[in-house]
Image 1 (cartoon, rainbow, N blue to C red):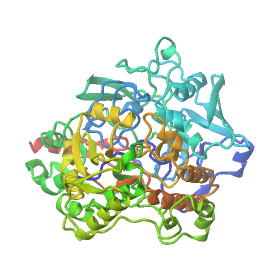
Image 2: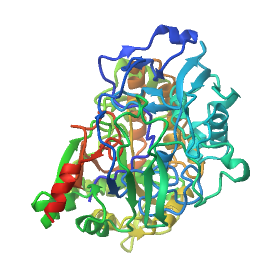
Image 3: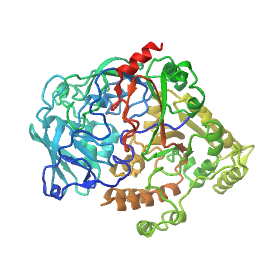
Image 4: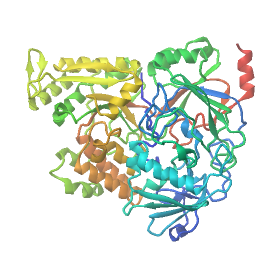
Length: 623
């Protein structure tokens, strides 16, 4: 298999890699002037009178049917099932695609690091202390029933999400104080002093709900009632656990806004749900759905030999992924005493033979992940710079000495699957930690047998676990692969009821407050957070604050590299693999921009793709 595309909607930040040539926002923005967009450090590419984003086809035709299986998820969503149309709370399994049914205050430009431009809000004024944001709403904004979308709806939505939303939303809204609608056209958003740099961008990206719709409904309950939206699509037909369709709103009020022109072209978008990745592939070959991001190297290398792929009816493309790849690996739950010693956790790293796994199971398709900022300039390399040392020196004695040298990199094996030198090192570490061998079993210091359950919900990942489990057995560790269904898997992760689990988190080059749900001590105690390893370190917390408080991209890079050194020294995970490419396959009846926007998460499908009637006719004739 492959790289998991567990790209949570926000990942470790809203932005991505920086780029040259951006025009700074006018300095007058600090004086409360009206602005058509905003970004973390004030840089905007597009002027106030821009017509559309450069990466879309403004003349793309509308129409057609598009179907896919999920490759991203956020909050309570699953890749394999759904039973709720509320995708912003903890309860239930939220349906994929629900974000397409809601408008937001502003919309992301995917060819800039972190810029947002007016959507339901046409402009924003920012106070001198940057704690008060005053948004002016578009008078034409409407919900799907024709009712007006007002400032009161925005205030209701933001305040409700802070109080009753998914725990990850609540954590990221920590520095958001309140939203008010003094009149229909004005939203006033207040932030706490010392607020995280990226919180305003997160706030403007959240869905806008109808206050009137929820007057007699409970927001925090899982439900199959269709919420009243204002986005480009409405919920169409669906069957719980099997599929859900979204129908394009033909008279959508926002279709011709610059942030939407050339996007949302398809009449119907349908998500199909499969419990098994191999079965899902068979569904694709049978044209049960039309688009697939291929996450399984084995399938990409060996199984696209069916007739439609051979004769060109199914098209395959490899598209660049210029976004930071983030962190993928087995995360070790340090809430359990048996994993409290970092030497034990490092021994687990030495037990994984990436080179053999990549060569034998994944057809050499991947490179080794070493950092949560993989594939970006935020990664630490070599000895710390003077600027990094200035951040790290106050913590000398609180962190391992290696933090002040080259960062930890997982060992490179001989590719045999059982590298003796690596296994000897693992044995040495376990012995030093007091875990001795008795009757062939590795014992914990309290005398219990050392067991590890590797929890997962994807059958196709079993081959990747098997060699790791075999090597753990060689060390005397009784390791097993535990496969559960998607609902049970998410419930156990939310309760931190696991030993180790395989997960991927996306990253960006403008991380900020969204670091907290992944790495902070607060998140380690928050049910449903992404801090799977249970990291609770005052030093990590302090460096997160340095990242959040960075005043420019140079300071941000320095803080992230310092954080990276400390994180890697903690041995919180067994790093796995990544790729800088997207592998996509689709039935050849669609067209798309030449390449994805540089900072987009994914390949821009279905948002920026369109139905090609000529291709579709040719495909029909080729049956």
